[in-house]
Length: 401
Image 1 (cartoon, rainbow, N blue to C red):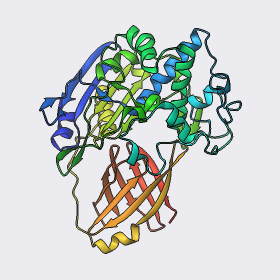
Image 2 (cartoon, one colour; image 1 turned 120 degrees about the vertical axis):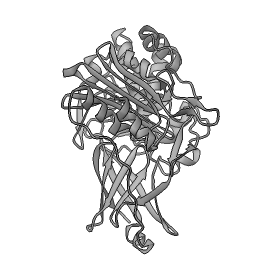
Image 3 (cartoon, one colour; image 1 turned 45 degrees about the vertical axis):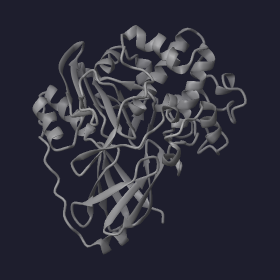
Image 4 (tube, rainbow, N blue to C red; image 1 turned 90 degrees about the vertical axis):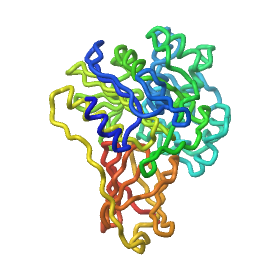
């Protein structure tokens, strides 16, 4: 396992920490690269990383803890807890937990990256999306929405009488001994650029809130995975070939909670039949986190795996880039995201709304590579569509202009 992960690290494709366990027994855990390049601090298994959307499983767990105490019901309308919220009589907590509320996602709006470094109150976050039209009637569709999870954070505070972070610490993290997990904001994230690590743009934790603000370690997440209830897993809905519980994706023999935010990517995966848990946390936004998790699982299960190779880039006529430039849309778990491809002199650039702008590097005249929220390979097809393999998921982007 060390040889496998180290191969990625030596190619500049990974920096972070990994852990593989069978039940309570840790089979392998190790840190790679630096947690702080300016001070030369190495990554270790006890290093805390931003875990992005893995936060959602903890928000869901907090809701279930309140349900166990009889303080709320997941099928109650949110109007009971958030009086005055538009359409709150038709939207239930279950809709928010399964991304089936129809509430648009504030993170994918154009301009989010321009304001993400500034502090904001939850009320201001909610005011920014509460009056936007629903994408569909609650329960009649699925569209991944960070907005719904922000509302769940507000519900937790109003019902419990505690701040969101305090409630998690007292009722989730504390009982499990997760001493390095919380809403701390001092982890440093990076972008890998031509073999060097550059500091990632800053994201204020208040902009992620109950949808993505938690920091944790591979060791703490292992403690958490030993206590995940079936009610959290579900699954309850399905969209674009992905089944979804409360904050986690459920596939054949595998349960995944993953996250990506500016400067960080992460995944925790359970393989129930093998009592196997694999966790990969990285402080490099464009690290090969998904490939590493799948490879470590294969090694643990005695299945074939491949050591990584170095990608080979080629030179193409920049005039070709004009053919690919334009705006595209793509769907993942029901959510439509916008991708802008532009030519900048002799380079082809790409920006997915909510993520930092980066370069598309040619591997052939039609195949390109980008480092954005993991490693992404894109094929520009003759029909104007773009086929992407993004963190192990196949996605199609369609040109709209």
